[in-house]
Length: 326
Image 1 (cartoon, rainbow, N blue to C red):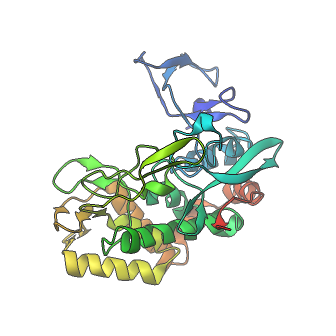
Image 2: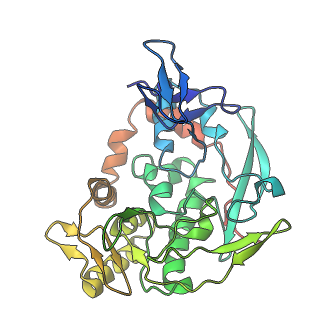
C-alpha cells in the first residue's frame, strides 16, 4: 500500500493527507490522482490536519517509507490560531511560533486545571494515545509527546473524579450504553466546539474565547457519565497504578466485565452497560497490555528499521507548548 496516494502536497505548506477516496464520484468529492498512476479517483473533501489524532500513525508510515516528505509531520495544527477569526474553537489557545524544517508552527495549547495540553479534535483518549501504542513517542520526543501524553491522562482522571465527579474516568469513542455508537471525551481538551461529551446527555462545556466571544455554558452539571475500559488500558502506559485502580472499580462496582473481558462501555450513574466487544477497542486493550507487561512488545516490533531511523529524529526536534500553566 502506498500512502502517497493520499498525500496532497498543495493542501498546506508541507502538505496534508486526504481522508480517503472513492472509485466513483460522490457528493463533495474531489477528483484527482496524487501519484499519477492508474485511474483518477475521487478524494474526500477533507484532510487530516490536526496533530493529536489517531491518524498521525498514517503519517508516520508514509514518511518512514518515503511516500510523503518529513515536512508533513509539521504541517498539521497543534491548535488552530489564537485569533478571533478562529474563535469558534473550544477555547483561546496559548503558545508561541517555532520553526521546524523551514515550516512555521504555532505551538498552541489549551489550558485545563493548571495544565497546558495540546488538544485532539474531541479530547478523547484514543486520539491522543493510540499511535503511542506503536511508537514510543514519549521517549523519542520528550519535549512534546513526553509532556503531553501524561498530562492528557491526568486531565481525563481529574475530569472524571474531580470535575464531573463520576467516580471513574477514561473517555473515548465507544459503544453507547443503551444501543448504537457514540463519541466521548474531555470536552475542554478538544478542539471541536460542539465537543465530544462525557455523558449520555451530551453535555457541552463552552467557556468562550477570551476577547472574542463569551461562553454559553462554562460550568455545566454533568449527567450519566460514560467511561470505556480501553481508555484506561491506553492510560496504563503512563499511569499504571491509577489505571489499574480505575479498571478494578469498573469491574467490581459497575459489573462491566463478561466472558470476553471488559464490556465496551458503561454509564456510571445508571449502571447501563454496552454489552459488546468491539475489535478496535479490544485491540487497544491487548496492545497496551503487551507493552506494559511484555517490555513494549508491540512498539519493539513496529519501530524496527526505517520507522526508528526516520521518525525518531523527526519528532525529537519539537517542543510543544504543553506543560504547567504559568
